[in-house]
Length: 117
Image (tube, rainbow, N blue to C red; front, side, top):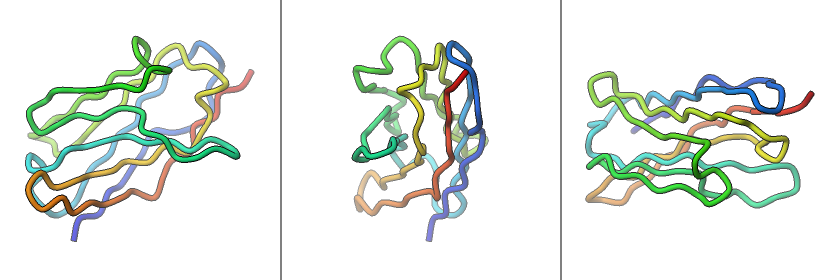
């Protein structure tokens, strides 16, 4: 069983930055593709960014050029660096892991990010 523990959310002013972290416990970290999703008020959950076990990445259009996903396999941690934050980035951000062979997946509990002046 893999448990995902997120941290780094909070309140930030527009234009500010935050870095989210997600540290899975259990499993072999390098065997998981890692994603960040978010769910804003009254909205459906959406994919924000993903990083494969190879290190290749993809981003949703609204965050391209502002957010960076990275992983440190030595520390078993995935990061989401969020810069130039906008009020529309306000959401609960969820860490998600999917095993690259079995496709079994896991979710974190979510961390709140609020962008407001």
